[in-house]
Length: 112
Picture 1: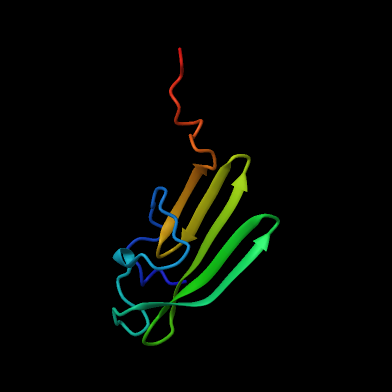
Picture 2: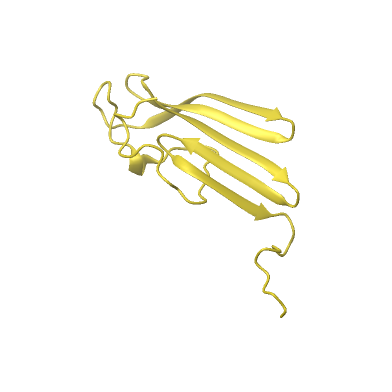
């Protein structure tokens, strides 16, 4: 992973978790070849570890194959919620939780 390629390391992305793709707003240029071109995805792997789906891949410079960042995305179901997390030097860090029920109990107003 290369901190010379990004504007900010691990920016806070709130609840925006990317399963694939790249956050190009945070990409300066390749620290190795000094080109600002497309960022490719390589070495993508998906594994299921005890009910948790983990997707990992590398962000790579199109021109020189320099590894810009390693991306990790996780998905799991905990109780009645879908849990998402993302950790990547380029794309940032984020987590989200969404109810699997039609109405999210955390969003309902108290009756009294």
